Image 1 (cartoon, rainbow, N blue to C red):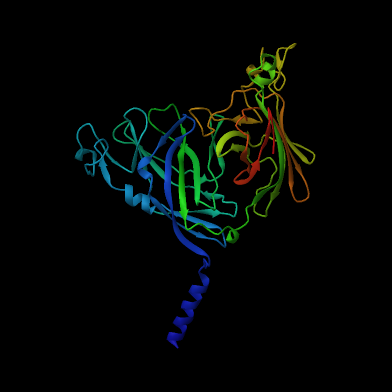
Image 2: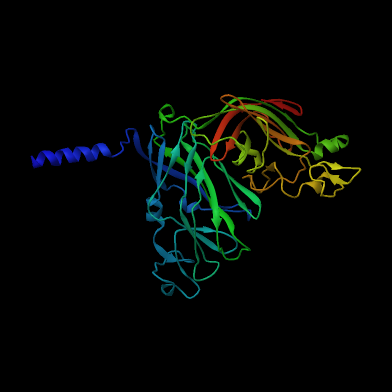
Length: 422
C-alpha cells in the first residue's frame, strides 16, 4: 500500500511539472560581441568572446527561449593581473604594483584602459516567435575597468532583443538595434542597454550594454513557433531623393530625402495596446545596412478621434522669424528650429557610426505619422522628410516597433532617378 501511495505521489509530481514537449537544447555561438555606450558614441569590440558557444534551450510550442551564462562564467571567470593578463591572482596584492586583479572578458577601450565584462552563472529566460524576434529581459552583467584602481564594480541588467529599444538619459533617447533570427543561417543579433551608474571618468550615468551576434544551432522550426504578437500586413511606400548637386534644388536638398509610407499593423492577443502610450519606431534598412530610424517617444501621439497623430515642422517663417512648429523659438533658417523636444525624431548612421546612435540634424519640414484604429488592425500613414535614403535602391526591410514588440517585412525597391517605390 505504501509503495502504491509513493508511486501515485511520484506520478502526481510529474504531472504537476510543466512539460516542455518541444524543448530543444543547443547553443548560440558568438560571431561578434561589442560593449556599446551610445550616449558616449563609443563601442568597444570584445574579440575574445568570438567562438564561445552560449548554451540555449527553447520550447517551440510556447516560445520560451533560455540562454545560459554558465559558459561565459566558466571561460572568463578566472582572476588575472589586468595588464599581463597571464598571471593568476586572488587580490590586487598578488599583482605587480602597477597592476590590479581583474576578472571577466577583457577588451580595449580608450588609450591603454581596459574593460572587463563579467557574467555570473545562471539562466536568462525570454521569448522567441515565428518572425525570429527574440527578447531576453534583465540580462545581468558586471563591468570592471582599470581606469582607476582598485577596479570599480559596475552592474546593470539590459533587456537585449533582436528588435529596437531605447534608453533615455537627460531627455535624449539612445536606441539600440538588433536583428531577428535568420531561419536559413541561424544568425541573430541581440542588443540592448541599461543605465550604468557611477562609471569613472564620465560626467554622469551612461547608457551601456552589449550587442551580440551569434549563430544558433539547431535552428528552430519556424512553423512550430508561436505567431508574432504584431504583424506588418499590407505595405507600400515612396521615397523622394533630393538632388543635392543642383544649386537650384538647394532648398529641397536642405530638407533631405522624404519617406512616404502606408501600412497595416495587425496586433495579436499578446500585443500591447497601440494607443500612443508606447515608444514607436519605424526602421529602414537597405541591402542589410542601416539607413534610417524614425522615433516617436511615448507619449508623442495626440488623440484626434480614432486617429493618433504625431507631427513635426521645423520650417522657419521668414516674416515672423519664428519656428512654425514652436513659435517660442526664433530663427533665421530651418536649422535653428531643430533643437528642443520633438514629437518625431530621426536617427541616421554616418561613416563612423553605423548603428543609428545619433540624432539627425537635418530639419524636418512637415513630418507626420498617423495611426488610425480599424476593426482588427491599425492603419499607418507616414510622411517624414529630413532623411538620407539614397542607399535604398534594390532590397531592404521595414520594421515597425510598438513598445516591446517588433514587426519586420522585406521590401523590393523600384528605383528611377531620384524616385523610389516599394
